Length: 620
Image (cartoon, rainbow, N blue to C red; front, side):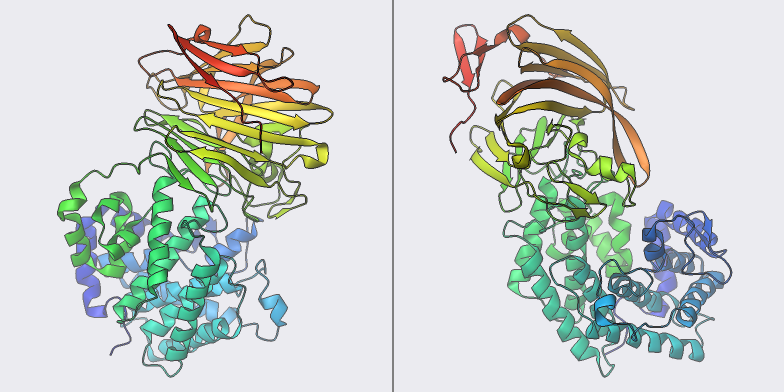
């Protein structure tokens, strides 16, 4: 048995050469980043020489946490493996040694302070676990380099043990994904340094707690309990990485654990936009497709492969495994999008549509600190383009932008009296009462869902929304707001279509046709026709909005807003059709009929002698 889990020093250069041949762009990018790191340049900020690990030029504590996770060692390791230049090993080991000398373990602090999940500084349990994981990889990359002296090794091994003991002794709640990050570090050390005296107890403890995390955090349908696609993916990747490492040493998690991983993969594959990128509900972004490569390798499912990210698995499984994966018969099959409709009822996410159109409906609970006030919102796309979007996350810092991106106003739902569905307190804290969501009806055969939330109960208002996707290819979204009192209602839809023409149509009710075009950053002639019905006093306007695909970066949107101040109950009916379809939306085919006494109206669609009616479900 050897204290090496991934690769030995004699494989470093041969693997580096194969990495450069297989992934030349990624190899070059790693070398360029490593050159910056050699002069203490972290993301454009000079961190001093030696590095000051507590210096924060941004004011955002995420920056300090980030650099103290030592993820940057991977770039230095790749550059060293590819080129053989000792300067990269020297820089990496100087970073590690300098950190050890200046950041003593704070065991003298009270346990409640050490366990606080927002604790500032480099020894927060999350950073401790993720740093230990990266140091284990650094051991594989730099062991036997010129800078790896006996005295450094002694210092390094002492700190590895100190990190592992710290994670073993101080155990945070298993209810949040941080605990997975704590345990992946402990498991990495236990499995790599398997001959050490304490490694077996570290392994047993990490495995037991990871099993507990899986049971506590992952819902029966496979969604992570935080109900945030991004953090679902983070948790999935960590769980799979732990399973992969364990398998390398001849161990396995329980069958339950593997089954939950598989269900998590299913959720990840469904929760994608029509263009394949991740749907950015709650604190998520839509910049990339979900990277399921680790799970694809673990379960032998090459059709799940995301080729542009496969290099990330190279140093874990090795070049032969990557090459065989790339050349397998299934690898060249184009994986179709998971079928719609789909339902994840434990999570509260539902999908509708066909191969050309897709809508993901949010009937989820708030989900905790990373949630947004977005009950009954949705994302919709057609012909490979997203036409109505969730805003994503712009920043975690407590700024007006943080509040905006989490607000009801920034989502595709109805805003009442300008207030959030759940009161916002600060960046990762919500007030009470929290909006509660209830699914009234779900019919996958006819592609219909109806749900309601009571987030405005202190204002005397309940919001119910029904969505249909009939065979005719339109989408019907029916909003019914019941209760008491006079309120201001804003029916808001956020679109990257930046040019809108609005026409008020005749009729007793408010009736508008809005035609969107000018898809942002896209020359394709695709647009959307939108027919909006509402009370006679309803106005329709277009205003500016924003979405974010990456931190501190905003992209412009247009918000199509139906606005009315009226006595409750109030209703809105929206008919949507992408204008890239062969048939355009025909406004005259859609009319309103009287409903039940004191009930909402009925929408009728007529084609020749055929009629189809859409009624709001009014019972509970």
